Length: 62
Image 1 (cartoon, rainbow, N blue to C red):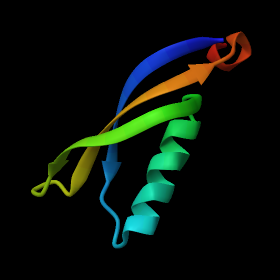
Image 2: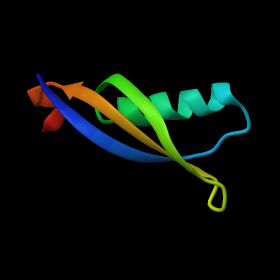
Image 3: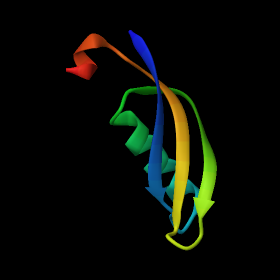
């Protein structure tokens, strides 16, 4: 198992529940999230920058 620090750009959603689901879906593509945070929001492009620490197994990386 390895840990990775990742950054993802997520489109803003209409509700916080939808935003949390969009973040969870994106992070799941990259591994099992240990923690994450929204670190920036761009109102002009309607996106949020999410930084996360995720774990993955050797088979996830292949």
